[in-house]
Length: 270
Length: 172
Image (cartoon, rainbow over all chains, first blue to last red; front, side):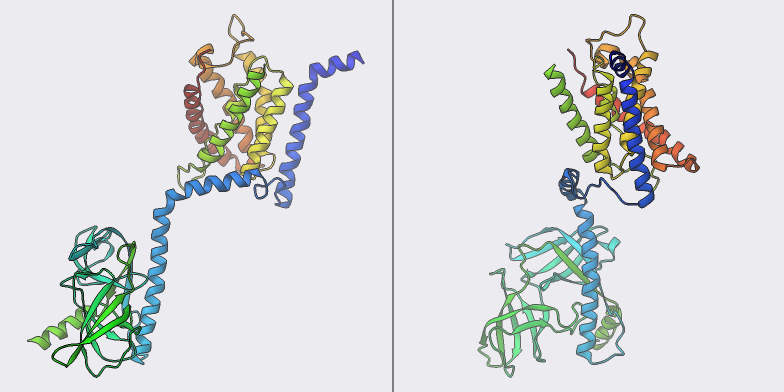
């Protein structure tokens, strides 16, 4: 008995090592054979810690992930817009993908001035050009005015000089969307013909009479309206869909036919 | 005595957390999967001198199994840790100073000197990595991958461990 204890004291750690090592090899071989993980991280404390730390580290990739999502959204928006146009035109011969959408985030903006601008964090490098329309997920935002390599400045709808051609949904009466520098949520549609019939709550969309915005982008809903003193046209107050104070991601619309369209326009004017 | 236990439990938790939360996520070398950061062997390497050998082996096994839980690699880390703990005694004998070890001393840069620590860490880390990568591949037909992983991971891990020892360098 004494000898046995002496033996264990002397070589015990060696046998412990051999025993545990065999156990490890057993685990490894099991895992290799069955491709099944016995002690895995899905149901133990390890899983919890892995998940928590993942959550903490997630924010590091947030920028990249947002950019990915923006790209994906752009693609989906592009499909929707182009399909919509086909439907409006009742014409299957229209060019596929007449409009290309480029997603961007916002680097800066003002909303409380009389002439507000929005700065996008993308420029000529990403394919942006002056004159392109800018929308967000809710409605229209503005039109690009200047572009540098990496930035571009957008004339917001909330700019007293902003003029955008809009129309009543499901009717052909169109007018021009302006802003009086007053309320961030209210725009004014001028020059709607007196024959138009509409009610408060009707939707206003873009008219598609220019290549800046395709037809059918939501703008806002009719709040109230007034017949002008001349008696010929309505002025409609429109509650805008886009919330300019919380805007973060926008989508820039590029029209492939823009040059062709502008060419014929200038010929008209000559 | 209790201070030794609590200090080592604390060390264990810190080392495991740093390993799985931070080092596990570092990815350099892109698609080349040769760079790994191993900090945890430092726990086995710098357990107190007077600790019984079978306790060291048991602790190494617990450390290895804990890491296996996080890495989903049952047995691989545990086996490498066990082997490192087993070899530790012989490396200590190999590097024994002429005047012998003072059993009451901790193994630290402050007590043992930077050269001793550097060579002691290098030998055991290399042993650990060779064992680990061999077992991970589980076949010597991957000899090229095993060699490259061992060499590159040795460099990165060695830097991490020496930095760790310099930061946590007890003076008493």
